[in-house]
Image (cartoon, rainbow, N blue to C red; front, side):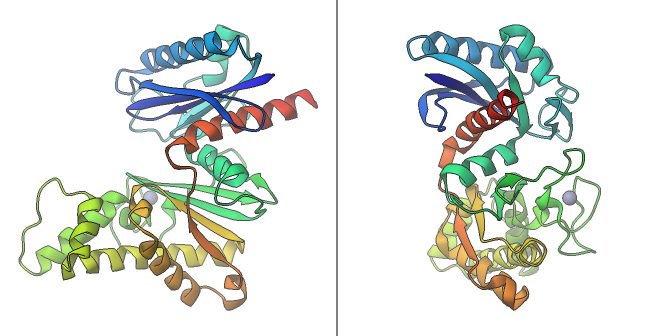
Amino acid sequence: MDLFIGLDLGGTWLKYGLGDGDGRLLTRGKRPSEGQRGREAIFGSMINAVKELLGVAKEWGEVRAIGVGSPGLVDYQRGILMGGAPNLPGWEGADIRGVLEREFGIPTFADNDANVMALAEARLGAAREAKQAIFLTLGTGIGGGILIDGQLYRGAWFAGAELGHTVIKFDGRPCNCGNVGCVEQYASAPGMIRTYWEILAAKGMSPPAGLTTEQIFARAEQGEVEARKAIEDTAYYLGVALASFVNIFNPEVIVIGGGVAEAGDEFIRMAEQVAVRLAQDVATRGLRVVRASMGNEAGTVGAILLAVESYATLVSG
Ligand SMILES: [Zn+2]
């Protein structure tokens, strides 16, 4: 059997798995990514993960390719990290393909982590069978993916699909990308928490320390008006960005994942209603806005699918 390895690199954890040519997971694991200890340590963690999987793979077949999802801007053509991964110090410039191919002699492909998750949702998850789709992951930041005619859109030099940096407020909150008012500053987890703080502060109330978005949803559930307002505002900000995506891409489906979205369908419905109200009417007919369905395995399965599809292209020449 042809086998494929997927590595899903994060700031804290490296998740990894072995799958078949359909992206079915045969085995998986996770270990510390060593993300704070520099490039050599991260590669060390990745190499150990691949060695572990190669040991297991022997009983099933042959590993044909390795796929890697990494935070930051990844040159898919060369498998090199170009930048934009502040949570992984020293990772910029990492030659992911070069290092892993030299170590294992197995074709290796790397892409941005949000693209890899989008691929999992597009092939096996919530956007299955869709040809035109938009993917957002609402977490510490906002990851974006764009599917056009069934293929991931990466941009002219792989710096595209940064949907989190869509400006929704031109005089808004400063963003770490250098711009102001990016939707990431409003609809990410820290963005929602900040909105809640501002609502409390405007009423002379002091925000609780160490608050999470789960707690804001729980407080709203208990009837707290400030928490409710923070959720509505966050859904509105997200909906404004979604309306732009609908007007630009006319997607069949928008898939939303990550911690903020997992809090409930109601939040997604609120954002959807805003998008439908603001976007051009024709573009919203038949539009579906849904939650991601691949859960915690999206990154690993997506990296396996990246390996599967890239390897197929390589072999077909
Ligand atoms: Zn930004």
